[in-house]
Length: 422
Ligand SMILES: C[S@@+](CC[C@H](N)C(=O)[O-])C[C@H]1O[C@@H](n2cnc3c(N)ncnc32)[C@H](O)[C@@H]1O
Image (cartoon, helix red, strand yellow):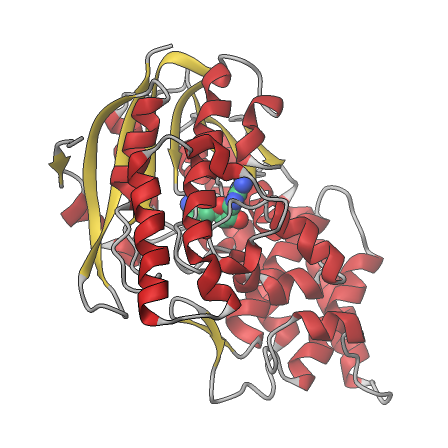
């Protein structure tokens, strides 16, 4: 099957983060798509204040924030707890921002006082927590200061404001206090941050938040709901025929472990306390890498008859055998691909009842070459699956190309545009 490919949006969108990003910067994945891309499709789909947009893989909330700024109602589904919290906080502009500033000032003063007079052992993570994070993710002193600040935030627990305080801390843990670097996998820098102005930088982040809320206060009543859940069971989470459009970016089949990308802040803030918490979190995720495949997984049943996926899976497994690769991970490569596209099929199927007839959908996805360099045409395969499930495939836009670190080829990131006719 072939579809027209256009780069109507591609060139312009490569400007990525050049634009000023109020609210988006409160906390976001390094690889989230740019606000600009969402705006283009909101216009392209002719959406306005009477419509509801859904992002079933909302991540750090780019789609939801853009919708809210433009007065369009939105719903997000997200399986990762810290990203869910980020999406929720980033779309809650109805808090009293003066109270937020006042409370933060009290907390900051108290934290500084404690830190200046501290003469006991440095605070640290529990043994279980320590095992969950990447070694040397954060140095001893920044961690100690973070834990002191966190304790005081929790002491002043306030139902309306605490989530905002925590997301500011999460952002600064990753980008200002930790030794993490993203490129695009998460790793640890050679040069370690032995100290950081933890309280001061957190308070600066709160001030940014307060400024942004003041700027967009007029839109605070626009509805935005974010649900912690699994997009493969979306029909159990959202009302029937309530959604006019989807703008989203699911994970790609590329060995990238989203739970690792957000591990440090998830552990420090207490979302993941031990291995069983981690597993519960991972089980909600679409299978997109060998580190979140489980024996009981069976999403492949959703693509049993899909020739493209079957051929791709065989090609990967044959290549493994040809190369004599025998590690546990490598043996799972072909299975990840089946589970990934099976999960996408299950998700697309579960969306049918909640979409209004005529709903438009935009799926941003990237081609990959992580499994023995075999080219996975993610966009084309998703278009094929969608078409089999009864969606109309309108076109595939080129969003941008990325140089593969493995093959040195240019890999396409595309936007699959669909219509649900009902
Ligand atoms: C590519 S990211 C989305 C980034 C987002 N567009 C943004 O701007 O931040 C994909 C997201 O899907 C989430 N996810 C993975 N599997 C999921 C599932 N089954 N249900 C809901 N969310 C899921 C991941 O946790 C991740 O946050």
